[in-house]
Amino acid sequence: MRVTPVPFDPALGAVLDAMPRDEGREPSLETVAAVRAASAAIPVPSVADVVGTRGIDVEERTVPGPDGAPDLDVTVLRPRRPGPPVPGLYNIHGGGMISGTRHQDTARLADLVEELGVVAVNVEYRLAPENPGPGPVEDCYAGLRWMSRHAAGLGVDPRRIVVMGGSAGGGLSAGVALMARERGGPSLAGQLLLCPMLDDRNTTVSSHQYTDRGTWRRAMNVLAWQALLGEQAGDPGADVPAHVAPARASDLSGLPPAFVEAGSAELFRDEDVAYASRIWAAGGRAELHIWQGAFHGFDVFAPDHEVTRAALAARRSWLRRVLDL
Image 1 (cartoon, rainbow, N blue to C red):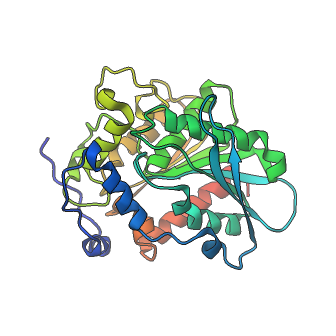
Image 2: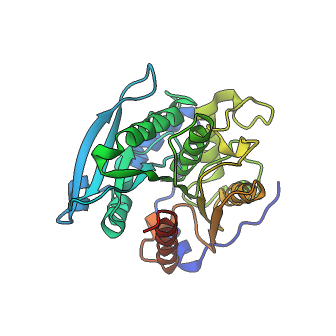
């Protein structure tokens, strides 16, 4: 497919130009260790440093995983002041399902806990290829079930839980919402999907537009899906469960309200627009934001840019509305 990329916003393009370029080998299963090493090399403040003197209590917990699978590590962040049960955010980190840790999202969650007065549960899940699908999404669903079942002890209103995440975490959040619908719970108030990774087939225009520049390029996305699905990845006739690749779901009715966000200059743009559109077609509720000139993960790498401020404001506005804050 011959395509012309949507241009980056000039200021965001300058951020990309200042970032180290990956000039190593073509991504393959043999390079996953290098991908993880590069991800681990990005400085991530400790939980203690992020929380600092804020009125937030932090608790590290180990909770049951799926049947027959290892337990899960979660971090709980909650307002220090006592009060009636509050809404809960269940967060799933990104990294293409092949890298990353929950701690990379601590700052995002601490800001929401402080500003909105919610409780956040941040889950660690097993990574591919050592743990192929549906392992990662089953982990995430098990963690959500634990949060819902222990809502009272966490100070959470079980009727007001939103599942959320960025990139792979957004795709896993969409998958968890599908699982909750099919398995009769837990009940979710919403799904906050930030540039979600939804479609292993990589057939959209935007999936072909970003091969050479950006924080998440086509070759890496193809690798990530291959790590998760093996030979099934990209095969339109393969029997891939919808909760593993949510874009394959035949029915998007009966889902909790969705907030879907992406940049116009990233490869997930078209699959994310299509997902929101299909929720609307099924009579569901979705709010879609496509930020002009923004690359994948722009809010992380360009926290002071005007589009990031607009995106953060839009997310908070949606959370206040869907959680009745």
